[in-house]
Image 1: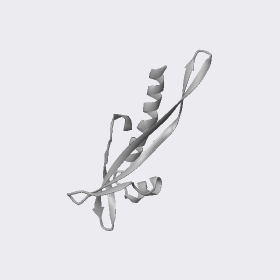
Image 2: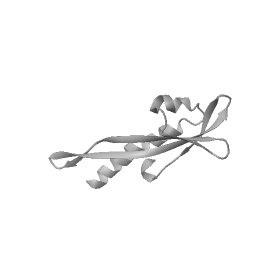
Image 3: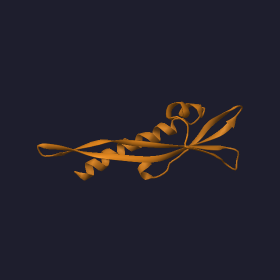
Image 4: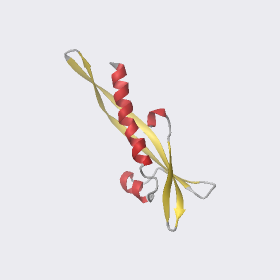
Length: 104
């Protein structure tokens, strides 16, 4: 039963990474409009910027045990980083940095 709960949690968390990677090639304004202001903006040595958001995912995972179903709460917090290159007055997302295995 614990294996099922772990797999369900992994599938839920993996969605955020795919969404963040979908911003590559778009204005940095897009993720800001979707997630709000980043928690950090870091000026990189090569002239690019790194923008970071803390994404918290929580809920319940159902685990069946014969005739009963138990709901196990979960909460996961990940920091996602998008890097961006200056283009005129805007920054265009050029990469996504994965923070850890569980924050895929």
